[in-house]
Image 1 (tube, rainbow, N blue to C red):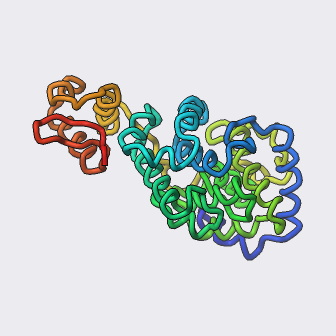
Image 2: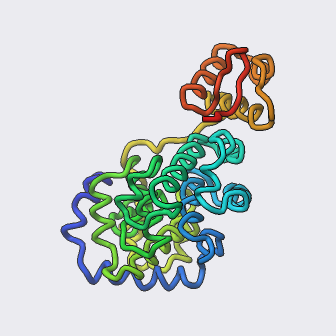
Image 3: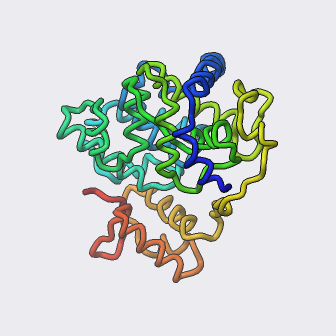
Length: 308
């Protein structure tokens, strides 16, 4: 039976005693071991939570922390960010990677300012309607900022559920409908408890039930983990996708953007040519940045971060 088959079979068979037996130990562990992160503090507010969720996608906490703090110091409200050109968001994004997230966050801030009086909406559907906000981010903001009951499925949570309930080392490469159904089945009924559960399972996956070296001796539910009970079988699904960077178009894009972030005036083509020797790949990366709206070409042959 593959990991997908196991996950598909679980929601119907999931018993209330099993899900209830997981809630208490995981939440108690979280109460004792949760990291003191700025977006978890009450003063962060919904905007602070939203900023953190955009930044934390595919980026570790250690890299996000300094950029997050600078961002909130400069733009403490959505309206503050919306008042500046989108290129300033790209500039402040620094080296977090995947810089289109900066443009999407700027677009979300603009919509919040224009449509919601400058306040991040609490309604899940209105969150989902914001530019750049998908199912995960909408659920995370509604849960972490407003204490609502939503299934919050990031990579860490999916891995915890795959091991503890499905008995698989890793979840499928892409989130499935069966995983969403399982996550909903595991949600505590109480809204505050469900919001705490969402944060606790995410932290458990980040600190204990890690991808490469899970520390099962520190896991509060190790004695009821289906994967351990099965003898910790190796992953039997499609190969795990590895991330490469060196020599890729992503690396070239990052080098080109670094030049533009440091420049206060439009940058000539020769300055961009100097960052990468291979002209075809360099041109392809630059064209991609322009197509993504991250760079604006000017009529005189220079380039700048976007103003509009």
